[in-house]
Image (tube, rainbow over all chains, first blue to last red; front, side):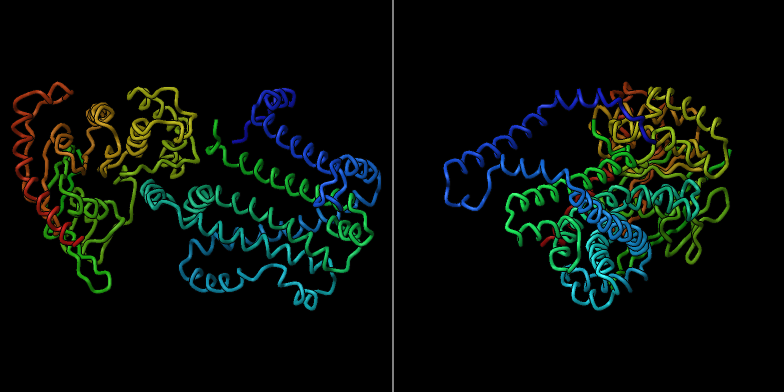
Length: 267
Length: 272
């Protein structure tokens, strides 16, 4: 039951009146100011760090280049692909593990053995396994999202109060009712938690993968190029861009989750 | 009138890792159609086990349970849960992801016993009967515990059960809310006259509500005493101050105190 979108103006008005927003902005402004003052004072630890104003200038130049937006697009595409496959396979697997004792018995130990292997440790094997670098990167992103989603969904199914299923059975529920009307909505909050945590991981992985793998585009690649070329301001622009990309994707997932679980809405 | 619940020589043995735990031992109880029977006993006396056996969530090891002569449960035989035996759970089981109206109407609508408009009309009528008109579109999380309980009882009643099974439904409520809930339950009971099997460990609640109170022994659970509550209906809170209520309470208290003491000593021994 989705509520209609509130008018944008009203939303912005609410944001402008919210103390949390102003406190947050004040914190960021203070951080930037201290950094700027630090560079003016020529603090030794900031010797190699450009001032925020220089970074801003670099940022203004870079947003005009096609290459910059291409980097966004390429990294975003990799993240989206790997993440989408991870969620599409991870949610059903987690549900199946939670609902079938036998399936749980067969698959849980395997998941527990593979899960602690950091996604980046899969890089060498993936390079040998996949014909293209692109597929390698996507497969590693997939691994990061997949295990996080599986474990969260499994935990969600296992935490369902048995009374819900008993109540449903008493009211004459059929097996498919139990799945669609009880298990799925009861697990929905865990699914979205897993998706949000998994989304955070995918950006870590894409950047690392782009820095090790020999490919020609992406935000991680852009940062590495800036490092090789000695453009420190561009490194910081890349870092900020990656942070922004992660923030945007997580916000999207949370927004989607809130929309699809209206019963959890806090007023 | 239907809904005569017959519990004959029922036994239940749990056998986790070979440790035979006798939860119920030769429990017999005949509940007449339309009777409100309350089972009281100390914690761990097997009263929830008995309710689960009637509801079809658990199996019996001995004896048999039947409704109006039709067998529900016997060793090796167990009728699956169904709308003829609706349960109101101790911790509540309203679906948090659905609105009050959907929660109440889902049983009859999904199993095609009522059309949606009919079910919704009935739900609204029952809600306003217990002073809850206007909350149809809210989610359970937006309601107080007392409101949730009333909604849950309505959800059970709209399924038109033969027997209504209530598992300590008011346990988590404060004393004031509890007394309001008792009157709401009795109001719905007077309206429908369903057979009610109600379990609790609260004696005052038991006597206020019941036609008969069955006092159970501590584990292994047996029926120790049956007290017939000859207080007139409809009942309200003023009853609590009458001498007859006090006498009945005294009678029940003596029966259960001994059991509570045994349960306490057994608990101490388990802890030691």
